[in-house]
Length: 106
Image (cartoon, rainbow, N blue to C red; front, side, top):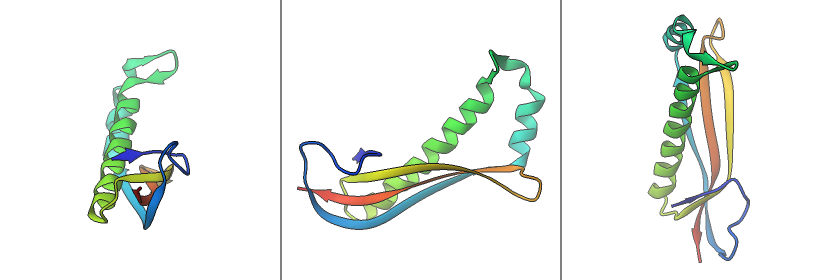
């Protein structure tokens, strides 16, 4: 399956637009507490553990998006948007949300 942030795929035509698909992943408050407790891995102002968890959340959201597209019979998702939101009473959770348009290519 082709996943892209672009509105089209060079050299391919869209035969059918199948609908908007989404995927979400939420990182909870305990994760943040654990990450900041182990902040010793910071190098050059970057936390490898924090980046790893963000990457894992983004990959989980993308897999959900892909599964939703497959269930519609799509072979690509175009116009993908990736969004990060802080949630919760004390901003203790992070949501990674992805959305795009499922299409069948010609």
